[in-house]
Structure formats: C-alpha cells, structure tokens
Image 1 (cartoon, one colour):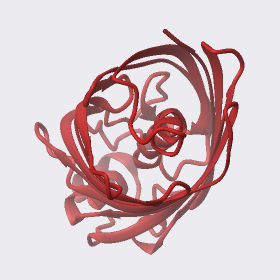
Image 2 (tube, rainbow, N blue to C red):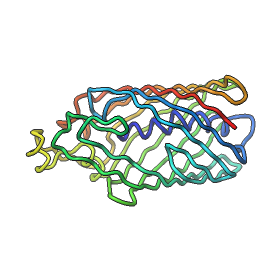
Image 3 (cartoon, rainbow, N blue to C red):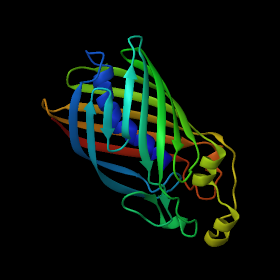
Image 4 (spheres, rainbow, N blue to C red):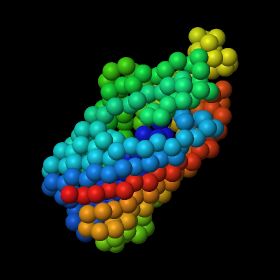
Amino acid sequence: MIARKLLYMTCFSLTGAATAAWGDTNSPPLQSLTVGIGSENAPRYSGSDKRHWQVMPVVQARDNAFFFDSLKGLGYDLQSDNGLYLEHTLGYSFGRSDRNSGWRDGSNELKGMGNIRGAINTAVAVGWMATPWLSFEGKATLPLSDSQGLQYQTSATLVPFQNNIDTLAIQGTALFGDSRYTNTFYGVNQQQSLHSGYAAYQTSGGFYGFDNNVSWSHQLTPRWSTAVSADYIWLGDRAKDSPIVFRSNQTLVSLAVLYGF
C-alpha cells in the first residue's frame, strides 16, 4: 500500500530523525542501535473500506553515514553544513494480495484482481533543513525487480515543539506516480475485470493523493521511548475514480515502543 509505506517512514523514522536532525547537535550519532515493536491500524489496501491491525518488529542501526532500517531498508545519508542532505536506500515493497493478509496489503474485496508481486526498490531523497524546525524534501522510489512503476513525492515537515523528552512533528506530503504505478495499484485491466467483476479502469500518471501526518515521540528513560503517529490520506481523482477504491478519505494510526542501546 502506497500510503502505508509513507506512514512507516514518517512514524518510525521521523521520530529518530527529528531528534538527530533538529536536536541540539547537527549530526546523528556515529553509532546507534534501536529495536522495538510497532503496531498499525490501517485500511487493508489503499482505497479499502475495511481495516486491520498489523504488528511488526522495528530495527534501526547506524554506523556513521550508513544505516539499516527494517522499514526503509539499507542505505546511507549525507548532510552538509548549509542544511542540504541526501539519502539513498535499497528496500523492498511487498506488493498487494487479492486475499486478506496479516503481513501485507490485501483484501478479499480484490478477489480476481490477482496479486501485485513484491519488488526490490531503490529510493533517493534530497532535502533541505531550512531551519531547526522546518525542512523540505523530494523523494523518488524506483523498482529494480518486477516493476510496480515509479513513485515520487514532495513533503514539508514542521517541528513546532521539541525538548529533551518530547518531539512533535507535522508533515504534509504530495503523492505522485507514473502511469504504470497508478494503474498497478488503482487500475483494472480487461483480464482483471473479467475475473473480478469490476469495471475496467485505466488512469494516467501524475498527482494522485495527499498525506497529512502528525507524529509524537516521547523519551521514557534514557533508553526506552515511544512513538505515536496519525495520518489523514486523501486520494485524488486518478485514484478515487477507480472501482476498487471504496473510500478516498482514509486514516492510519501507528504506535511503537523502542529501546536504544
């Protein structure tokens, strides 16, 4: 699910990034390891009117510029003194099932649509921390194996409050995709229409939605912390006109308990 991948990055990565990038120091710790457990209540897929809970492990490790994140993948980031930064990751998209699934997007409502196979992908993000409390970013995600199409997004993040214990962040993200991407996740081709009973639907690439996120992280002890995130996602005409989109206004809620070594 497109929105859920964005939520993962926002909920579990922004909290750590906010502390590092917007904290008292200008660079992240040279070495760190954080583990934890996260849970998310979300639609079964982008556009579904059915919801479910998912529980997932959270692992974040860093060695200088290189890092591993169980939700983002393996990558590195570079930061300059003027606030510009670059992040490059190698990750995996789980695709979508045409059955209810406990570990990836999917719903019985999609019976006959077939599965969207998982794909290895690479993501490149370029951003600018204009101030300690405001940043802008552009990101592109490209599949390297079975193509799901190109996804790209632009975002602005505001940190209205931060101290040694709490960080509150607000992020707005515009979502875009090429025609292969939007048709993979929202289109219905003739074969899928025949097997599923949904009317055939094809759309074009471009802007397809907007994600508004609010996240809060709280340091319980020097090692234990919690993170809570809520999203409101609006799907535009390219997505919401699809016969498999039953709800174009969606919400997601995530929470995690983390332990840092």
